[in-house]
Picture (cartoon, helix red, strand yellow):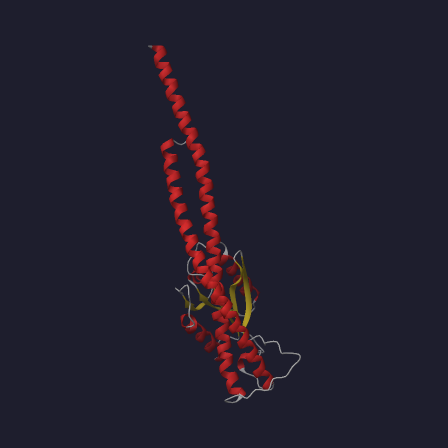
Length: 283
C-alpha cells in the first residue's frame, strides 16, 4: 500500500484536474448555446436557398447546369471531411473519421481529400490519403470567409474536371447528448424535391438561367458552411458532456483515494501504537 503522503499528493492532483475539467465544462456550455443558435439560423437559410433552387429549376427544366449533371465516368472523387481543431470532445472526431474512411474504401475511383479542422488533416496524412486542401484554426463562431478558400478550390477542381464528384462528411447536431456522423454527396448537387402541387410564377432579373448560375454556387457554399456550423455545435456539446464525465470521474476517484488514505493512516497509527507497546514491555 502506498504511504499516506503519496495518496494525499494523488488526491490533490486529481482535485486540481477536476477543477480544470469543471471550468472547461462551463466554458463549453456557454459556447454551445451560441453555436446552437447559429445552427438553427443556418438551417432556415439552407432550407430557403433549397426552395429557390427548386423554383429556378422548375422555370427552366431543360437547362442542365454543370453542378447538376452526372458524369458518365468517375475517375477521381473529392471528399470534404469536417472535424474539430482541438480534442477533448469524446468520440466526435473518431466517429466522423470512421464514416469518411468507410466512404473512401467504398469508392473505386481515386480519392482527393479536403479537410476542415486539424484532426481531419492529421488523420488523413497518417493513413496516407492525398490531401489537396486544408482549412485549420477555424474560430468557434466561424464566418463563410474562414472556409471560402477551400470551397472555391473544390468547386474550381470540379468545374475543371479534376474531380468528377464531391462528397461531404461532417457531424450533424441532433441534441446535446447526440451527434450523428453524416455523409452526403455535394457535387453533382442533390436535386431539391419539387413541389407536387401548387404553382409559382416569378419574374427573374436577370434571366432565370443567370440567377441559377449564381445561386447554385452559393447553394454549394452554404451546404459546406452549414456543415461547419453543425460540427461546431456538436463539438461544444460533446466537449461539455466529456468534461462533465471527467469531472464526475475525478470526484469518484477522490472518494476512493480518501478511503485508501484513511486506511493507510489507520495502519500507520496502529503500527506506531504496537511499537510503543512493544517498547514499553521490553523496558
